Length: 452
Length: 89
Image 1 (cartoon, rainbow over the protein chains, first blue to last red):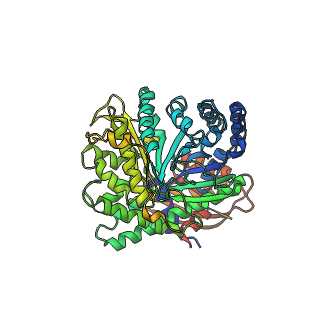
Image 2 (image 1 turned 45 degrees about the vertical axis):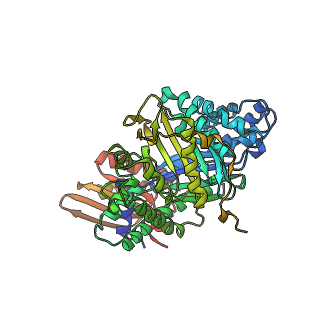
Image 3 (image 1 turned 90 degrees about the vertical axis):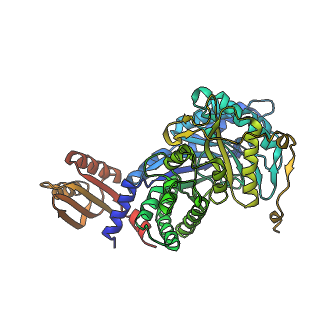
């Protein structure tokens, strides 16, 4: 029997506390589209994506109506395009980006992710060409996202790729300087990239995945915060329990929507990614949860511990609510997309060094951080290497999505608009890491990678 | 299969009749209503069987939304599954 308080709680969560399904992402394998003739390959890609995802947006809208729950994004993730590009020698992989953009336009999805390469141990055919084409691909398309995996716990860190990615991030910002440097906001550099992540910009469809699959990303920082503010004097144990209960409810909804979408589309259901993904909207901030736990401002002492507690409790609450958990699952801390983080960065409480420490205990990495436009490629590479080291040693996913704000300096604001928000340009350390990055090579995998 | 219809807003003449009128139009059988009026605020939760529904569920949602807008009420029409999955193990 339904209880009226439960009904009203659900409605309050959706209406007042910004509870939503952040994304339904359809993963589509493009391995059967590989062709040495790039035009033929692009035609196959278009044909496959538009036939598989033809009803994705429509289905999402139907589910929204049925359950009265907003589904913010409908997206597609594809096989890393470097694998398709490897067959087409001498051709520019940007053609694939344009073909994917055409698919995005036809299907009406927000983003297609997978303009990607996996180079954690080294470059294979097509990888270098694809990586070098990223700045142009991101400049000539609007809805394509790119990611490059440069390290893992098992393989160590490919420092040649780290060096290259520093240059690519900078070049991508320069190429889109007239569009608020939007290029690098669509580019993620990973260590331990998950193959079933439904969230952008890092989504791609791993080679071990089925031909087509539905993954769902839930969200709900506002709900967690509202639950916590009711208990200003609760002990930390109680706080952890409240977060767990809330995460359970949120994830159950993700499970329901995912299984319904999978049934309606006739595509297997992959995973629920139980992440707390903030948006710039008021009441949808992860920083504000940390503040509700008891910090005056996100970024002050205690932030890392509070985030560790939050991240762990979210996973524990969500894991029983879904048959399969995957993707990034945890708390996101994208600076420009979180109203509380933006404020904390502007008032100087939240600094890059603290964010780096926070990435050791949350689900992702340095995300959506604007840095001064005159940053050198080697400094970007060094930031990537630091993050990758945290991921490699701690057996977790870390990522870097920083945006060199061309023509702007510390204290300025870079406006992206929409879900990407606005980023205060944060100060960086101005001492050089040039020699370290120039060396190239590979950081050996840590001792605990040898598990067998 | 049931739908949960919640109506919240300023009390007025005929709210219950208009909401149940739409249910009847769409062949949704009202099986339970709980309603209260606090001062001048009207709050109602209605449970309707939708297994014999004529037309799409989304058509029912659309009609309720139109009614809600015309009366200045907040009307939510949702499939019961969302509440069952969120609040029951």
